[in-house]
Length: 164
Image (cartoon, rainbow, N blue to C red; front, side):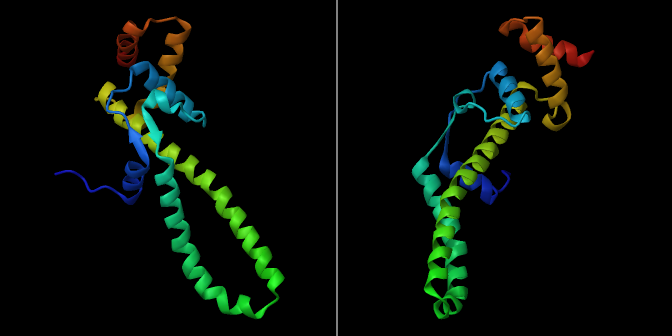
């Protein structure tokens, strides 16, 4: 029985196009290292692309779900005070909304990145859980780069070093 998708997973499925092509081992290891270092991973390496119009729709829905009840509660007090305060408040809220979209986009990008890394991890390393072995495999990968292990030998090299 398939597990029920969370709200976050439904949003990710709606705003991102994910390639059906498997992620190459080397690309997975590079993406994992970049993600762990707090960098943005190249979407082409993991095979995803944002549908910007859908991202705007989701963000707009989230903002309106907060803003409409909030404005309903604050309308009467704001109508009674000086209009200049309301204008300044509107400018500040508008700025926060536009700046907030960049944070929303970055958060969604990080969420899809880790989801795709973990999904691909299960394919390349089915017997080694991501949470337990990701750092050890990252160390082995760095060692393989120093030793200039070829792409063909990379998987064998990592598995041999894991079993030692």
